[in-house]
Image: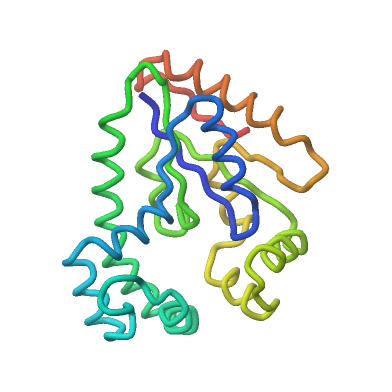
Length: 209
């Protein structure tokens, strides 16, 4: 079975793209969502986060204080890196266990992560998909979705690689700019990956589409 990463900057629309793949019958591991669950349920992870960021990281030691954590880490890259070092190994192990339960007949699965390329996760996967959109459109989407200021949105964007850096590492690119039709792009990639899943792993083509 092929392992396929999918990523895109905040506001690119990768969640919508993942939903369409799920409609096609493809299993999707949402790293961002699962990371939040792990941060609330894994006692060792919780202990390390509190040690790093303080007791205010959780409400009543149960649920994440996301606003507090965001304010702490997005202005201090060292803290963000340290937090990732705590959470990512737990997510990686969880994703491995999850992937082993998928029926081989499915052909491939997707591992979604906003920082797929930034952290080097893409190297662990057979292929990787990048969802792109113009920066101005991404900002408008986030403003309407999360009611954040342009300053806050820009700060979050600056903590992720830009598309130019990711494009060189992606095998497939989906342009979600409101002009190019989304579903035909997804169907083309889906068919290609289904075909590739029938090949021996050592004979998989090295492609960039």
